[in-house]
Length: 392
Ligand SMILES: [Zn+2]
Image (cartoon, rainbow, N blue to C red; front, side, top):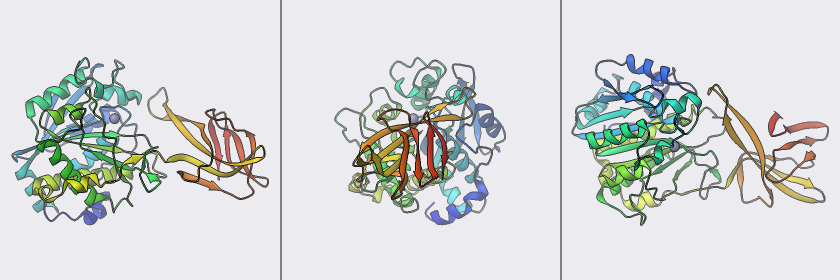
């Protein structure tokens, strides 16, 4: 895949994006339907059932010696990886990239396990139907989904693993005050954050991914928090010799359903596969991985400057929390006053800086937003009991 041109792939993206998946609330039947419709070049098999009896599936593609395992949506409310995997599956069927794809299929075999947690996806919750966080269940393995995922790694013994998640939209990229729209990490396999040849290969592939995608995404890629979690899958797969790469989808302005983010998520996976197939990662430097800016929390969802609170002028930081609706097909956002004071060093998805603007209502730290922001007589922003009523 040496001749992979990311800008051309990006321009072609609308021709292969999987349009059957168009928001974060995708469900098991949609995934099953796509798998059932796959051409014979993909070998799909049923792995077993979730706690509530939804089928779990593995899709195999390619004949190469380097085994690459990709799994998504261990957390049911983190659907971006699943969407990107089906974009990848469509991309793998394009004729016009046949030379590059032949290289990939002769050098690698892909094992794709989309939507590990369909019961969580049904409810749009992180946890499975047993209320278990599958990604904290590697050691005890009480959930059927964790058991299946763990056994797959032991059976396939993949060289590379892709652990596909979504992160909070409040992470930002250190030094930029912009959202960490994507984050990458080669998870640690011990408390000391030691290195091994396997973990280093994951770091080197990430360096290639970063080079391929960061400039396309305006520098909105960070390095995820590097903390060892003995119960998590990425950490344990890393320990067991699979060079494991974590990808996290964060936030992007005006992309609540992550339809723009999924494109960069797909491009990240594709560039990593290109790096693995061409072995270009062996030319990378570990320093480059460590030079990727870290994630921090320097953004709010909304930031209002120049607010008169009594007789002092302050800035107000507002964040929302999302709770899934009962049907699992949407969320309700509750806006909370997260900070008050000098917030000039921070930023937000939306910044309101209107000289002369006034507040009508109460502003209380950590309480639901319940006020109007007015410019003269007109309302710029209005919250009622934590709900966003209007925004100009
Ligand atoms: Zn997750």
